[in-house]
Length: 98
Length: 153
Image 1 (cartoon, rainbow over the protein chains, first blue to last red):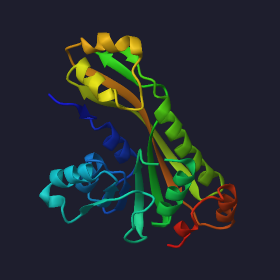
Image 2 (cartoon, each protein chain N blue to C red):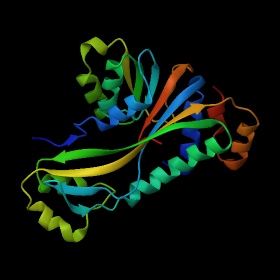
Image 3 (spheres, rainbow over the protein chains, first blue to last red):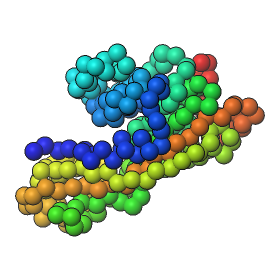
């Protein structure tokens, strides 16, 4: 048994209570290992996610299901400095990153 | 993140939104997290270091709400659990973190061989971006140290 954060999916459930992500374009700030990112992609969102921790982003990429590869992308960078690809996101999600 | 950075980052990413786009902000909130063993509270964790960070973020968001750049539409408070195979693994994981276990609980907790759970209260806010106007200048006066390059998008 290993250490597991939120296996009950409480965070993702809260997100789903507040937003229907189907068809949404999401910028996720502080994605970590992609725990929420994958769920948003599975809900039909296109997600551009980043985190300053390269190891965690690598883990996020490795765990991303193949079927989400076209809708979900990861970058390494800080919220202060990263170049934002465009300015037409429907949603910005700060995951404990403000 | 320093308070000035919070404002800078918040403004920067607000500008990445479509008109009336949404910001979702997930933060830890009080009360202090607790360690549970077998469904019973074993001890409280001092969450003040994280609350200080969260308070800065909330203040920045509230500032943008006050000047009309964001409109709070919904709030969802919920508990999140982190599961550890044993007390010893919990102690090892927590030691380098800013949040601290009570010193008098550590040795007892290390002897717990069953699953331990950290329960933490979190808040998700849904905020809608409003049209910038005079409020933008008002916010700039309130936070004059903000890097103006963030406005160049």
